[in-house]
Image (cartoon, rainbow, N blue to C red; front, side):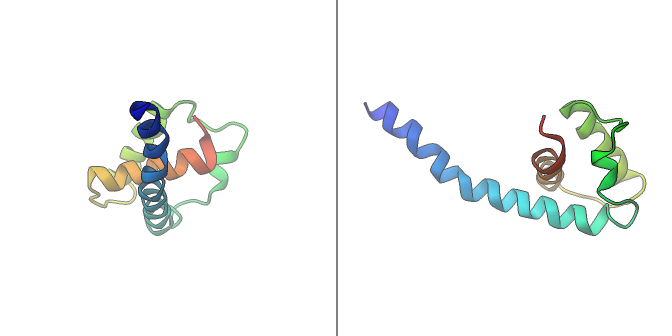
Length: 90
């Protein structure tokens, strides 16, 4: 009984954390990615990203290459989470 109650409470407790990560991901994306391209690259029919692994790899390339910015692993994860939830849905 206690385990079942705990399992119902955990998502409620984590929801604000996920929302903060997603909003940070959007803020970082808007700051560093939109200067090179619009969001249409995520939704075009011939998009190259077909998996979460490919998305993670591409975000890493863009951060180090085009954006030339240093992000923490948490910031990178937040950006990937934002892109996945908003555009890719892996």
